[in-house]
Image (cartoon, rainbow, N blue to C red):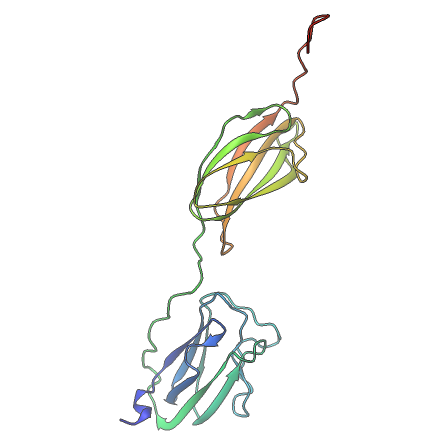
Length: 236
């Protein structure tokens, strides 16, 4: 069977710093669609041979940037060999070989392959504080259920006399899948834990930089209690 019989509209995946098929065969009038699957996404499809210099998935920039799931489609109306490479990574390249017989521009190129990147945000739930009225600067124990490992951020806001939020610092913890036991509102270099009313806005971020919906917790710091008074002659 001649090689051109397998030609058709087709798809090429870009992932792991390479094309899924470096030698693509199609017929006249057919199309090639490139899919950015990730996790590496800074790749262009840029023509480098005399017959395709006008084609570039990322014109006007030397640093291509794509989102997972982006597509770029070209239709080839002249036979020949068309060379392409990424303008940022020259080893990410391939060629399209167009036969001289008419093709079917309406053929199905097939479904897009699944993405190689996690786009699902983690869940942050069952956040509970052991205390909401705190004394001193040691904070309080907090338990939180997180669906993926990564990190947890707390943005601290102090409430003014009218109840308006004033940014007052942050803290970050490394987290794991499951129930995490952490210390909220403790004095830290980015949070001074002074007396006042506060809210903490919590967000979990997984290793793919997906972020959960925020969870807000309120607490009050009342200061350090005075030491107990001693009677004269009483041992400390």
